Length: 299
Image: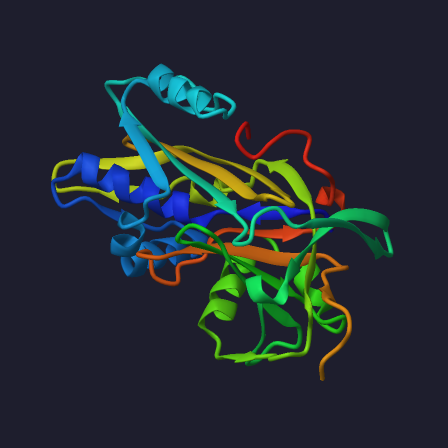
């Protein structure tokens, strides 16, 4: 399976923004199991996500204003025209720019079953390697110069099921990994070799269509739901940008070598002040292992 991703943070943020904009005791109601899961997450993490410093939003009945907001943040305009008298839309954008603790890392190449791929080596002083209870692979924690942390889970070869997880199941797995007990692999590796990445995806969040935002005075139904997810990672750091948009309308043992990330892996980000909420979860298959075409700043 190829690289895929879903950012739950910007989606929850967009839902929260819409409910606050509508006011009048507005509350979300599900139409299927997936939206029910997301709504429960909103009830659990709504206040946490409000504390994130990485997400900004625009709620408006002007569909062109929403598209201008997307374009100004280097995203494709994605909002289709809707009647401003009958609906309201929101765009929530997550943007994280991370730099490795010790500055640019040493470049290298990684030998994989898909050929040689560009990578970089982070020393043991800049990373921590764990085992997570209930999982067979390695969990890698990478602090950065900011309040953000990058987490990578390198699955064991016997965890082939991970490569076919889709949509919310990927998010569920990152939550399970984040919540599991972590046991450090102290002194076992000299560092971690990590592939460079670049991908741009449009995750399918059509499961949100039809969900209802009910207030004391009206019922609004989601008629448009989309997401864009972009990530670059190189020897200097990582940049992840995602946007979620919703439109609602009325009525409806020590080794002498580093641990090498040489097979597809799962990653996510956490942020001080936003609890352990996994943000921008992704599965990086070999198709995204490449030298980024541009800098992190111009993503």
